[in-house]
Length: 499
Image (cartoon, rainbow, N blue to C red):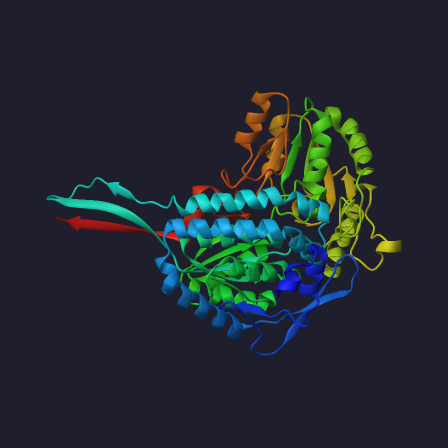
């Protein structure tokens, strides 16, 4: 970016970036076109209009990026000290702080999240970078006792695994990419990132800013393209040591199969159908908006969205009445509308999928209380849908068992806590879940009883890297956050020294 562009307002900086004729891959510190010369179009979900063209990568592009990442891993980057990597992460945080408004303008237009939501995500990003900066200086092994006769000292060392492939979903790439980038910079690994073809632009812009911040060429590379081409090539590449993936369970299975080429270790955050349990003694002033936004935030496009809202029968009518009243306060709007609460879903195919589940739910006998339609008028060209609520849902219905990934909430009544736990566990997924109760005893019964990776009590959706989160069952494995996160980017070396 030129000096004159740096002096532009954030919105103008974003437009200058978006106005490029083609957004190429970012490999070895440079913008490079696809080997094939092919491109894809990306669309603004708020308007349905073409926003930009991006390079359409394939196996050749992935191979070029992996070669760059391997060269960087074996080069001067390997000599950086923990303090050097920590200082680098601090510089990255500074430049992202300065350019965050530009980045959220790009993200809003590319994937549809309202700018209000994106602005509110800044503290979470800064915490994430602070966490990984601290991890850079806290990688350590152990000195261990042993049972070997003689004068033998034993210890373990932690070392970076090498080249990490990161496959990033479209529902929040601006912040989501830093679960990978932060760990790569803290550990001394290198990375090849493959963002979703539906939302690649903020990842490409961040790669440029990382380079400006002093991240060496080749340490973070970005290849754009289709999942079945670039994504598969990255998963199956024999010189990629680890894969970090967030996305659907179906794609996760494909990545597991592809990874067998060199027995890659995987970190997988997959699908979810989380149960949000509202007990009769819950504080409904908090539980109603908490449960509602546990589904409707990001237009329902969150893996751990609490889309199965289990409500104790004694309060189900009051909860439902309050829920519908709360929904009247939600404003659907274009992603650049600062007053909008909810934006569009990501694409026409995703909108079609979500709307098809409205038909499925009604066909199964559930009662559609609110929503269920595509919005017209000023929104007719975008992918906007009314936030929707089903009542009379049973856990055998498809809308209660399958991940919809849209603003669709299902209310399932229950009689007692044991029944609620049983319903919550009657799912192939195990990503998130919550319980609302003023009884600590009741809340802990649910926390201990529900088989899921993360549970919230009297809140929903808090994520802190110091604590971390992850899934179980068909929702994947491997932690995001906590010291366990770094284990995905390190391997343990046992050392025996005879003196």
